[in-house]
Image 1 (cartoon, protein in one colour):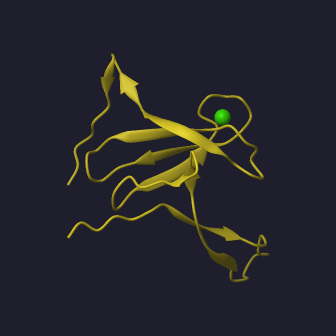
Image 2 (image 1 turned 120 degrees about the vertical axis):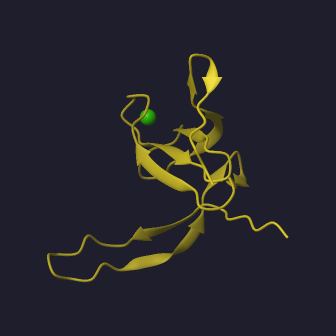
Length: 100
Ligand SMILES: [Ca+2]
């Protein structure tokens, strides 16, 4: 039986002062095009402005195939929207890192 993990994020409700324990809201599913994102298990998402448009995008490393998916944020940083994704390329080839 294949176990798939959908990207889930827990959002901090407040930035803790030094020495305080952070508090988090419950998890939410991250969607792309209205569908929960599922890139297999042990994915590694990171948020940063990949395309330099001032909004944080999401880049996700995969464990299953060693590929890296890029989700452009077409919303805002306060309410990100990911319409679709593409795998990152180098020299017209999908980047595939050692995996497993
Ligand atoms: Ca961006």
